[in-house]
Image (cartoon, rainbow over all chains, first blue to last red):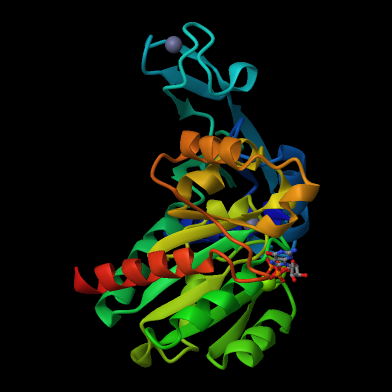
Length: 116
Length: 224
Ligand SMILES: Nc1nc2c(ncn2[C@@H]2O[C@H](COP(=O)(O)OP(=O)(O)OP(=O)(O)O)[C@@H](O)[C@H]2O)c(=O)[nH]1
Ligand SMILES: [Mg+2]
Ligand SMILES: [Zn+2]
Ligand SMILES: [Zn+2]
């Protein structure tokens, strides 16, 4: 399953960030996940629970998902439109000369650390 | 005081892999070894196509194959028995793709100083191998006739990163509603530069076009 692989990368990056900031406990990780990134948020959370609880640093830490709506840009009429509703073809002028502006993110936004 | 402190990261999960992949490409360039990453769905004919291709190129290039599988040695043994060339198995330990670091570790196990070309048979999957740059110099994929004409629309990322798309199992065309012309059009919508090569790996028909493409790529790259 794809999501488990992604979780291993998140854990690696969070561990590295924790080391850099001299943090010994993480209580939450906030992700930016694009609507068309192929990540299924529910699976990602399940995989996270399983893998994060094996790490002392991340035991019990919550994975929070911030969904980024996908937006496509049309080079011919310069309109921006929702990718999920309309796909590759511009709903304003019918052009195929379009590209994804955002919505493909698989990004660690921030890490939450207990303050004590 | 707030109960939690926030540390901003704002970093793509793929960022480290992209750096690793660039470094690996530089290393390959220094060593003069071309790495081809071959991808497809399970069973599209990667191993069969490789055996045919190696047969055609064996006298022109020094080659090795790395077979990535979740957990078996079947393909590596098949390649070795059919072609006699060096062939190793990489186990991904449950991961559905290879990343640049796993690829580099694999390359440590082949005789890099005696090779012109290493071919990596990636895990059978059209989704995540496209998202993880392995560090390969070129990407190739196989789409087989029974999978259907619409795959470039359903897996656009995979088709957009490949330098060549091989259409395999052309012998079964009469039994399926596969439309080669339409499929080529869809591929070029995603990737105007992709070379499309129809073959039948079972009989070897058309494989010479792919072998010629690969030989030319390797030679051009070595001269650059
Ligand atoms: N009819 C027909 N069958 C083919 C052709 N090429 C491969 N096959 C058959 O398709 C099946 C899968 O071929 P493989 O070469 O093992 O495919 P693969 O992509 O390496 O498979 P995995 O490594 O398991 O993902 C085998 O039974 C092959 O004999 C072809 O051109 N025509
Ligand atoms: Mg195979
Ligand atoms: Zn438009
Ligand atoms: Zn994967």
